[in-house]
Length: 454
Image 1 (spheres, rainbow, N blue to C red):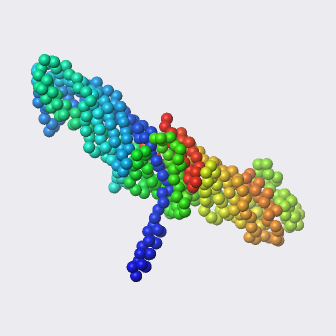
Image 2: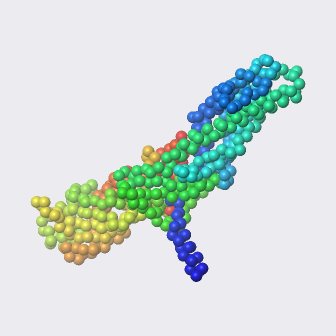
Image 3: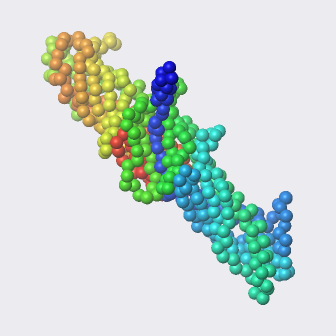
């Protein structure tokens, strides 16, 4: 009995296990940029310095110093290091001048060089599910102190005064700066899991699978993307079968986004109805006229059924979800469907079906990014199979149509696919990332975007 329960539980866990559909690896390049830009945008050190001289409720004045002011705050130098399993260690180096009236009665000026250090722990917000940095263990380390106090004063008195003054002023003045900067960084995650439209067909939402993982070299964020049709139905990501991972060889500290073939397959399922088409045109690209006379060159029985040439109408229906496959350097879109050809009739009469073929063909996919959306352009790779399902003109060898259908798909049908794909697919919205600068590569089971900075 216990064995049965164990097997049932294992089966349940296997069924509910979700593989990430997208992986994000944040290197130090992006994190350095974001912390530095947050520091610049917030002007937080200058604001803290301006607050230093104000009387604040509940804060006692420093004994022995009046008219306290902080000025000449230097542009900080920021150093970051990843802490495996925790987040980021941050050190902000700066210098400033503290002025005021000293206990001696004269003007006092203290030039301080210091480091502000803290651990920025990376968490997942319980309410929003978004990544969030939280500051812990802020410390102020004095690098150097210079003062205009008289040199003939007893060193012990001076040192005691400086120690008392700086240890009262600096932590309450500088440590809130770390928290304030993180507020700016955390805001740039705000839209990460917001639903993003795919034209009028549906939406994509990047949902975090778990708390991001920090290693010695990067932060990894695992997504279980949600792909929904316009009416709200969720398209499940298929079991990948094989794990996908970041390839080696990228520059130390760089950042990448990995999109699985199964995720792209789910996104393309949103467009499946757009891949259905009725083609009435007689002249298509470089093809011969689309008439029964042209078709009779491949199937002689057509000329017997239609001695007078009639325009052709072609109907293509995709009856299985599109599927994306990826091998290193190559990506294909697999389409299974039916191709039915009709002979048109005049005076508003419905066209007559000539034959219905089951078909399977592949399209090569080229990827690019435009305005932060993944774009695809296809070209015909191979017509893999044709099989006759029905025919009003009698049995015929469908293989004789291989060349005719191949040319038709490339000239008439591939443009329809490419038009539908122009809608583009949204990429994760985080940290003001500009994906248009990314370099794209195709690896086993995944597309890699090597993220670049301005």
